[in-house]
Length: 247
Ligand SMILES: O=P(O)(O)OC[C@H]1O[C@](O)(CO)[C@@H](O)[C@@H]1O
Image (cartoon, rainbow, N blue to C red; front, side, top):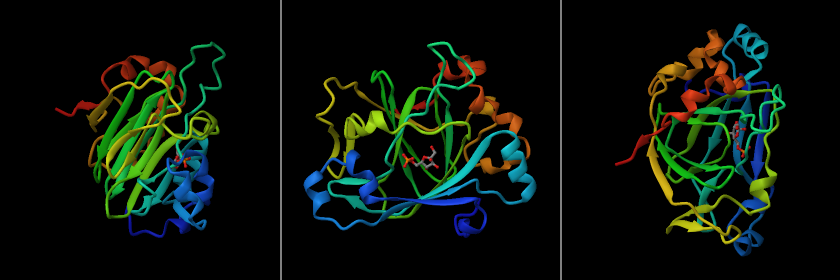
């Protein structure tokens, strides 16, 4: 995918996230009150390069989206997405059904992905550069931060069978840690804080996802992304370390 492309011409829906959509998840509420509302980032849904690809995506109930996050600050915090969890897969009724995973790829710029396990036992930070692939395993909430001076363009493949859950992150006013100019800051609305685990992106040959290989290419072979719709069949893969150690 080319970051110079006009994504509005190749998507089925365009959405923006505005500053005041995010008011519940920002660290500095005093700063917020001094700000006029404005668009923070753009989201292009179901980006497709041909009608055939779009038909395949709909048949497989999968979405390829593009998100564009300009550089900037939200008071002391670097610009970020609102953050959400995904619900448990809808076709299983058992209490321990995994939630839908997701996969991101940086198209241009650099992204810092913050992942927080639903039971708050893990907090993972992954810095990704152009071409890197980052898997969000089941049961991790996630936020993307742009700490750079460049525009970030990133893609995601995700199941189109659910709505994201925003409430758990909103009610705590953000994730466990905020990423600020001065580093990570604890969010005082939580009581216990796991250590921050800094990891590096890796390829996932088992899912045909490789750093530096445009994952849009899977549009012609979406059976390869079955793990996004049926994670319960791939739990062994999710139990393996899903990032490289940073040291
Ligand atoms: O929904 P949020 O938390 O604003 O995050 C936006 C991101 O999430 C997605 O909707 C998919 O999870 C992306 O398309 C987008 O990058």
